[in-house]
Structures are given as structure tokens and as C-alpha cells.
Amino acid sequence: MSAFRRRKKDEDVAPDDVAGEVGDEVSETEPDEAPSGPARGPWDVSEVPELGARLDLGALRIPGRQGMQLRMEMDKNGSRVVAANIGLEGSALQVQAFAAPRTQGIWDELRAEIASSVTRQGGTADDVPGPFGRELLARLPVRTDEGRTGHRPARFIGIDGPRWFLRAVLTGRAAVDPEAATDLERVIADIVVVRGSEARAPRELLTLHLPGRPPVPSGPAASGPAPAEADEVLRRGPEITEVR
Image (cartoon, rainbow, N blue to C red; front, side, top):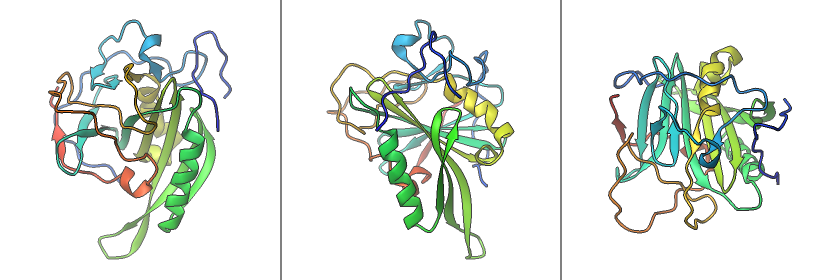
């Protein structure tokens, strides 16, 4: 397994289908530099003294971009936010944060699990280098309107941080066109993860909430699904639209 791939500011770094628009556009904040060079995120909250105008989603602080649509995804019971979905210029980005061990990352292990899951379902998954390290370029099997089996491209990106793991899934144009992926890659690179200091089991989903609206505590935090099954990654549950 790999150690954490955090990029400190003084370190060198080596190198169809999106849902229709829902809600109003998210207000824009000034983007950071493209995800290349020594100052590339995503960041731990300890590395970013000023969170700026990022949207407060709990464990994730998301930068706004002109024309960006934000959709919060709920679990099957509609009782808990499980992911943030971002739409931008014909592409979609799903982001989630999970707890991870203190001493090592989990992306190498999860990448193999996701690839195995995709293959079992009849798809393909190639382990390739990307702007954030190793990633999976997958073709997920889907059923077309005509009843035939088609394939949907998706990029699975994972970043190991200090006691957290961030998973990002790109679909739509950004999954197949590097130029179209640039803006959403910048969003990923500008995300701040707020893990908290409490003890959590590895792969436990970190708590998310609607923008700026922390949920009322209702008991111990539940563990999220292990971030491995590709068929669950892109399954859309009940949704809540937040207008900004």
C-alpha cells in the first residue's frame, strides 16, 4: 500500500451522462492554480488557515465555480447525506470523504477492489497515471433505452490524506476528454477535508450536511458503505437541491 500522498507547499510533485441542471448556479470563487505544481490540493483543514468562500458541507469544503450546480445525495432512507454531486459544463463530479488509518493510505487497496467489481459486472477498468496519482479509467455496463447493454465511462480518483481518504468520480465529458476535465480537476484540487479528531473506523463515511446547515445529532455516527463497489458509486438516491 502507498503512504499518504500529501503535497506540501515546499515539496515537488511529479507529474453520458450527467443529470440535468437542478437548482440555481453556485456563486463563483476565485479558482486556485490548476492541479499541477507544488501547491496542489486537496487539502487537510490544518493546511488551510483561511477557508475563504468555500461551501460548508461538513467534512468537505467545496469551492464554487461559475455555472456550477450542486446536488446533495441522500441514502436510501433519506436520513443522511452521503455525497456531494457537482455538475459543470456537461460533466459531473461526485465527491465523498472517508476515515482512513493513521499510518497508511487505502487507495491502492480500494483501486484494486473497484477494478475487480467493474470487471465482475462486465465492464473494464484500466489503472492509469493521472494528475492526482494512479486512477481508474472505467467503462461501466449500463442498460440502454432499447434494452441493449452499453457502457458509461467514469474516472475514479482517490487521494490519501492524513487520516482521511477522498474519493472523486468524474462522468460525462470529463471522463474521456482531458480538456473538459480541467475545471473539475481544479475543483478537486481546491477541496478542503475537515475530518475532525474523533476516533473512526477505516472507511467510515465522514459526516456531510446541506450547505451551511449542520444536522441535529441523533446518536452515534453510522458507518458508510466501504468505498469499493462500482455499482453503488454512481447510484443516485433521493436528492435535495440547495439553492445558493
